[in-house]
Amino acid sequence: MFLKRLNRFAVVIAGLMTLMIGQAAADKVAVITPYLAQPGTQAYLEGFTAEAKVKGWELNVVDTAGDVAAVISRIEDAVTQKVDAIVINVDPAQVAAGLETAKAAGIPVVGMDAAANPLLATNVTSNGYAMAAETSVYVADRINGAGNVVMFVFDAFPPVQIRGVVADAVFANHPDIKVIDRITPDVQDGGIADSRAKMEALLAANPDKGSISAVWAAWDQPALGALQAIEAAGRGDEGIVIVGIDANPQARDAIAAGGNFEASVGQDFVGIGKSVAGAVARLLKGDTIKASVIYVPTKLVTSANAKDQ
Image 1 (tube, helix red, strand yellow):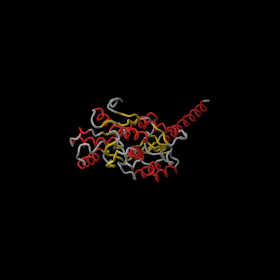
Image 2 (spheres, one colour; image 1 turned 135 degrees about the vertical axis):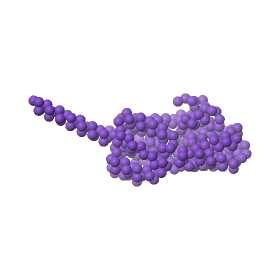
Image 3 (cartoon, one colour; image 1 turned 30 degrees about the horizontal axis):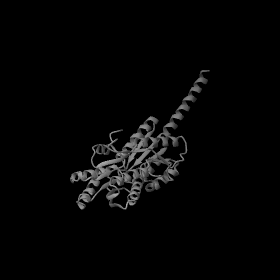
Image 4 (cartoon, one colour; image 1 turned 180 degrees about the vertical axis):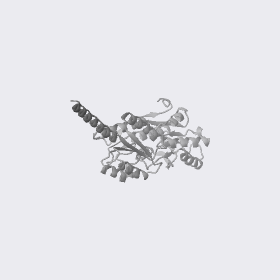
């Protein structure tokens, strides 16, 4: 009788150990991005990491520090390490070779503010079309449909590229609005410093009051750089309207101050990270996600609500 009970106990223990080993293997997740210097990406990871901790995942965050091409080899490394899921924050079209490797290995990949792509199980993001439309229409209305506008764009990254496309269309629909420059700043340090330098040069080239009516930025860092340049040039009283997208803490402070930086769109970055974790959890359970894109809600931020959290 004792031996039978001992054997049963051994079988139960063996079963639990097998379950625990299987569970540990299913918990390995890699997050790969070249944009960790960006506040938005940091906030995505805040939300994702919090959920990963609750779920007990073994998490590996890889930053290629602006090197998009390096993401391919990092994805291949993750495949070699036999992770169970991969999250990317980069244009999937630029890292297709790595994604093909993951697909061949049967490892699902989720985009975290990336772009819809057949090689991704899904992409979780904000609606860039809607955000760009809201901010560019804000500019057009504020300058009464007439004036010179400076745009800061970044076409190399799809979620930001589509914002520029929409803003282009809105401004083109106003015959008296002229886009005098479409600037792509260096984003190695986040984008503020280079945006300031480029805006300073543009201000010097357009010295007359009223020669620049507004600055539309596809995200907040260029808007903040432009604000610094305008204030340093002593042109803050010209009424140059500045808008951004993201509503990060620094941008909210600038908007709340009531100066040239008037509006941004608040993305729920932490919420995006949490939603990505939710998508990964579903995939690890074997679920199929039908939607190629999952949108997380946004809201317009002005001086009226900039201090709201």
